[in-house]
Amino acid sequence: MLGGTLAGTVLLPLLAAPAHAAPHEPAPDLAGLRGVLQTALRQGAPGATARIDDHGTVSRVTLGIGDRRTGRAIDGADRFRIGSVTKTFTAVVLLQLVDEKKLTLDAPVNRYLPGLLPDDRITVRHVLGHRSGLYDYTNDMFTKSAPGFEAVRKKVFTPGELVNLSLRRPRTNAPGAVYSYSNTNFVVAGMLIEKLTGNPVRTEYQNRIIEPLKLGDTFYVHPGMKIPGRHARGYLTPDETGAPLVDATEQTVSWAQSAGALVSSTRDLDTFLSALLGGRLTSAAQLAQMERWMPAGTGQAYGLGLRRQDLSCGVSVYGHTGAVQGFYTYAFASKDGRRSLAAVANTSNNGTVLKTMLRTLDSAFCGKATKTPRGKTGNTPRRRAPVERREDVAPALTLD
Ligand code: HEL
Image (cartoon, rainbow, N blue to C red):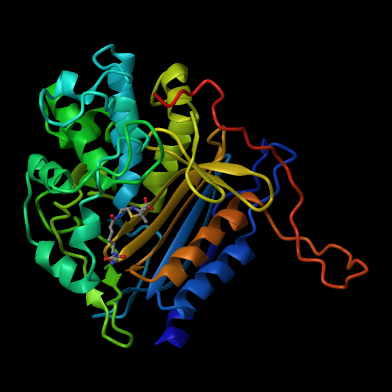
């Protein structure tokens, strides 16, 4: 099957080289990007596609299958489920509400949703930065990947039910103490949006982000199960070696809602992140709040609904990752938003592919790896020249 899929390669610089790219920024490495996607396919992804928007120039690389039933090639314009990249959209809505003085980041969640949480010290900022200590109920749901998924594929939860699943378990840390990723936080964030605006989250995504940015491929589909229009199908890898892939395309994603139920495309994700990092979705003050970083693992930091990923070449990029059944997504942009990358592989529960797809960021933002002269040891690794320094964790941040 793989041999056939590679024939579907598209390597497409759509416009002329950018006239106004910063001179110190290395050009994206499209051959390297293609190599990364080829590796992902060898490792079990049916298909993969990536798009770079660089100062107005669009490049796309697309390989493999979008629908295993028909053999249709994946297309760079296909829609797909973006999983937790949804969290950045949710955070943007809340930070706009901060801009509108309807919400205070350091206020307790319980001020707006009285009695929801068992601890008045949990603030909105803690929730958006994954520092609330609220247990991630999806840990229990998806212990067994395929059966766990089938058990919730058609289920419809209320947000309150999801929060209650979390509250059955002890909290992971004191409010504000450490970063501990939990979908529960962004379910609470969605409840805040609905309480403060009086509208469903769908309406707020639509009015505040999707329509202003003309994101024609972006939809909040819940509790409907279908991805509208032309889309890639998503394939979950079962835990048992050799078991057939599970077509996970149709599901309510009710287990995630405002933590992960958006559908989008690489084009829309690049537009969204460029707009966010370019300061066109929030005030500069609220973007700065999103970019107050806390350590979140090797080479990573987390702000408010926003990840910072530190690349091997010294560049940092900003965005989010998503892992929903059938789809792995990377969506990141440069500090000024002028270069953005969105990449998806239509597989999941395949950590090897997830790790490989991380390398799309190096190809997009670090440029070609250069061979350095071999030193006395004779094994000097291929390196990329550092081109930008990353900032430190916000010095003013207090862990209250
Ligand atoms: S997990 C993450 C990613 N986030 C979190 C969220 C999302 N996705 C989920 O919580 C779904 C987890 C189940 C996915 C499923 C699979 O791979 O299909 N895995 C299993 O069932 C494993 N037993 C932190 C990776 C993120 O990058 O933010 O999206």
